[in-house]
Length: 383
Ligand code: TTP
Ligand code: MG
Image 1 (spheres, protein in one colour):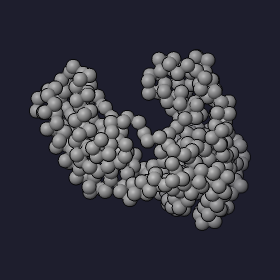
Image 2: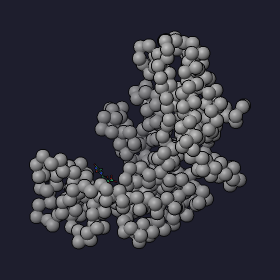
Image 3: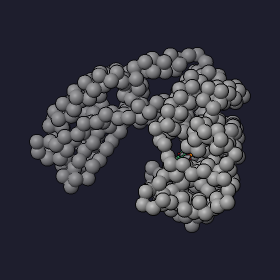
Image 4: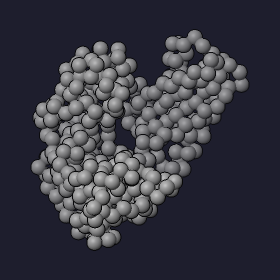
């Protein structure tokens, strides 16, 4: 096993139950407005995206909880919000994204200090992996959330709600249970009972169309979905989605908490001199791409854990194949060797000639975070 990697297509299995927190800032745009103008507190506050066509055309971005009592929430037309809030002291304000970003930035900086791994999602959400610092203990995580709440409240003046769970999927759903200023913890042993009664559209990726389709199969709750024959789900929704729905409904989610940049990928694609199935011609082309990718990763100081190839066939269909390494590396020999292996395998499966080829690396990590991960991985407590 040269270079310490094998052709495994699986992630390193999680060795310890994780403790993941999802922080979601409460009625964020409206709360930020209350922050700079405390006189707004207690009144219905509506922050709207004005389209500018007429004075009231546009939609509600968000509203505070006073306004929500009148049925005024994200997405409804502004004229309807005005109508529902007639006769109240309601205040309507336009979106000031730059200001919200400033507030969000301050909060994220505070939260980051409480996490082993941190991932901001959008302007008002962040995942924190606190497995290490809590020693896997959910009570310790609850205490940590209270500390975070106090810090954010006293230093910025904003409240948030949080979910604590063994993975991102459940933490996100849990964060929605008690709002505003709430915390909901779902222990590993409680995941099944917590999810079962919820409607399927609580799962990421289940929108109106999918939930209607599921309803026609007799699936209404996440519990129904969890019990449904996985083979049948794959027949109906395809392999990727079917498997995802089955796992998600059973509370299984191994997505790591990772810095936004880590989710990025680097790729190069170019056209071959002529359509071919000749591995030598393909390797010549991808060899140049590997060199270019090599320069970029050296410049950015990143390692990669996933290697992919792209093949655009003569009929212009694009195929990709991905292989996950055992551990992140910046070794270009590993990249070359893996690309060759994937292409050889691919050629043995497909009859068509190839027009364009590409190389892609993903699951990027910064050199220094990599160091940290390696030490934590080898700590006896994690084994
Ligand atoms: P959310 O977290 O969905 O909503 P919220 O923070 O306003 O309220 P909650 O207390 O329920 O978490 O979205 C975060 C921000 O994103 C929100 O303050 C405004 C913006 N947003 C829109 O601009 N349009 C939308 O449709 C939604 C849902 C949010
Ligand atoms: Mg929010």
